[in-house]
Length: 169
Image 1 (cartoon, rainbow, N blue to C red):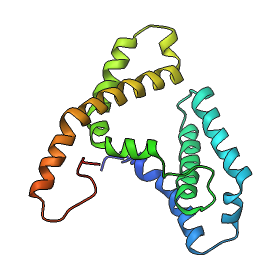
Image 2: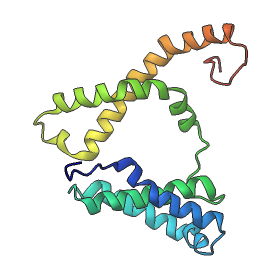
Image 3: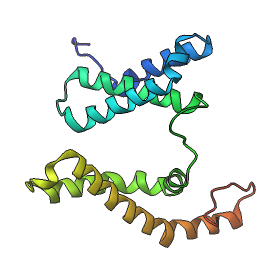
């Protein structure tokens, strides 16, 4: 190679999750610190501050995101007293429409950015996120109920092993 480096940002972030997983597996006492309600609240607040107020895209900024999200992921899946729970109607709903989210979200984000253009109010990151999430959810919900659910029902008539995702809930 000619001195070029290959960089995998997605894999780079896994090191924090791996470190937390090792701590969990070895039942280290430090995990109890991460499970404390005050630590969880601090972590979520740091994430909110990071998203709302820190707009620089410096390498250290991405490291902070990786660390915060690793903490949150491990906490959600391993802490029975997590202040947030993954079992909820809203998460079930987004799980149901998730295929459409994968398909439509990039198109909607690209279109929204083009339409927003120089509108000052819409250039505020949190407003942009809310607008894009709302539009995406509306379009994907329509797609799910008008098209995808009908195909899931049709699929259930031909499948040998029944699953829970047949659209007839």
